[in-house]
Length: 400
Image (cartoon, rainbow, N blue to C red):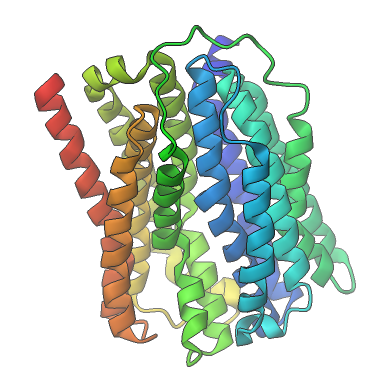
């Protein structure tokens, strides 16, 4: 029971189930919707995913670190993420609704809105569970999310018109996950040990997470903004991007364990023990590679089967998507280490550099999905990983 409550395996399994449910939603999409509405569903999923992993999860990490270190509560209030969700819904959703990729999907606003609300509920509840060390119940909330999404997807496939059911599968499962966590996370926190934080901690963590999401899941939004790319091709890329991001779910288990351990040990001791995180990084990257290689080898026929026609994406783009996922998994674990070490500014700078490096070749490609575009996909997570690894190695030389 103790292993279930404190290890990465339970959360890793829960994240795998969530990834399976997302895959089911994206596989069902072309069968329930035409090509243009499916592109709109993909953009709605991208908006909510970028918000969730770019803002909600970073605040979850901040709350988790502080609770794990012994604070009774994090200083970042719930209204912060609520206000951010309202702003995104009022600004980003109308802007995205003007894209040709979303015009044919009438449930776009509902899908994005439910996703934003779901992330608010789920991230706040999960931070309480992880911060108190109740990783078993944390994993249960992931299972509830996966089951609810698969149920909605199956209903959409069976219904005469499953458009609204498929739209509900974006965010309603997250709301269910938040409800599933009620009543947990009330164990006494550990004794506080050097719990340091500054007013800039949350912005740093948010900046790092937005860079992570921009490098991994921001491409569909970039593509839809060019306006010269056909909506079906945007939808195909959304599907391919989600397909190759499956290995990134493995980062959740390793990163959460690293974050909780770092927060519990305290900032000073964890800096001395910086070499401990290397095993987590190597294990996460190894598992991501073991999963990513078969996905790449099978990508041609699988993607063509999913979209019902030749997918039209070049091998350089497919390979870049696969390799960038492995680099991102390793970088995500290092990011959790620095966040738990009360040094969130380090990954914030690293992911900012990665995002800038990604945007240059993507902008130069001008919407052409060729070798230059592939370089942009790969270079963002790769540069970020390199920067974090160099700083970790330097810390090991100084403090090891």
